[in-house]
Length: 83
Image 1 (spheres, rainbow, N blue to C red):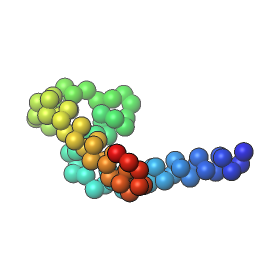
Image 2 (cartoon, rainbow, N blue to C red):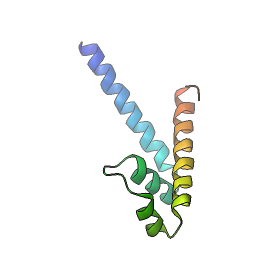
Image 3 (cartoon, rainbow, N blue to C red):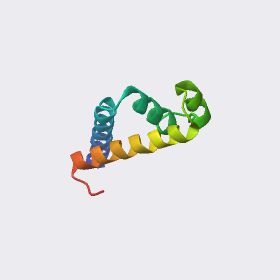
């Protein structure tokens, strides 16, 4: 129905706005790594990011996981959802 379609559009817009807002609060490196690993196609490899930032692949993985958790928790907190 039209109502369902409008609701889906609003839901997606709200999700995009929350993602943009909370990504903007991250450090440049955290945001770049998270975006490269989870929000782009093709996904950047740990190896390519480790070379770009001069850190180990494991450190890139740790930064990605930490940034993802912070992003997820911030969005869930703002929307009132449970972790």
